[in-house]
Length: 229
Image 1 (spheres, helix red, strand yellow):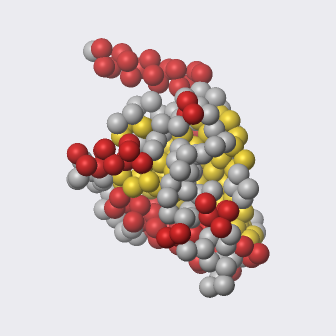
Image 2: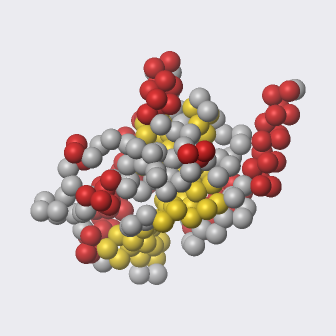
């Protein structure tokens, strides 16, 4: 009973007092929830000017270290390398990757832009390893390669759905879902992926969702969030 009561209080606190702040990076914008202490919706423009080529592609091995984000206060810096290592060491069957929100590959046209994707809390969240490396990786590839090679300007939104009842990685909230929206020439494609070790699907087409249904779900998690969608 005590645990249920505590969970209820946390949920009420989130719904009543959560404050979203905007963190502006050079090439993407982050909507950051100060109660959940997590970036919940990031967006950027994928343009022809920023297409990745062999000549401009940044080698991830050279900037692969995740760091804290200097643009948010220390009190919001819950996730770090130790948090992931500690969890994965004792939970080998339920490991979490440091999951990107804005993908590294989308910003690999510029060293500074690429480094700005390697930030705990604002641009990363715990992501189930299999989901991250299979279904979600293919979803990101559709946006970056398929749409990116056809359309000169694609507005990409990526976010995570978390509330006070979501699972915890130690003291860091784990998203229930990752979602992505790509808007281009009056059209859009949307995906919603279950962030759980039980999700063994490898087909990105299986997580396609209508924009109307996705926005409805987002609003159940974040009633006051202005998504821009």
